[in-house]
Image (tube, rainbow, N blue to C red; front, side, top):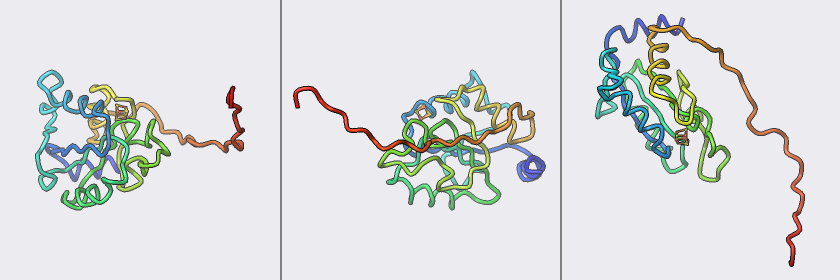
Length: 165
Ligand code: SF4
């Protein structure tokens, strides 16, 4: 159903706007790699644009920091409808190694309606290309998602005795 909607909404090229909302730059480098002549995403009509107002897709990398939340909401509103949001990398998918940090609100879906998730730390360029191809209906999904609880009920912390104290 969603695949048909994507094919109808984005029948031709897909213009993407890439944003870093707190990433370490690992994912950003892989996204840029996808757009270099080596992987040549433009042959599929995927093109990086400099303004969210020209974009069909928002590529979000990194865990969402508290500071970036208002700007991220403004950015999402600036992308015209219909639009897709793709979370790239474990941090954007669910906070990654920064999950539950004091300055992180979580993955991209804590703020935006995310349509597709591409996990990995960082995901390889092939995985990013495949994820976008699945979103466009050019490739079949190969795995099903599973829901994991990231924070199990933790026992009360046990005080640690430090030698010499
Ligand atoms: S998923 Fe890994 S590479 Fe990507 S922003 Fe997070 S820590 Fe960096």
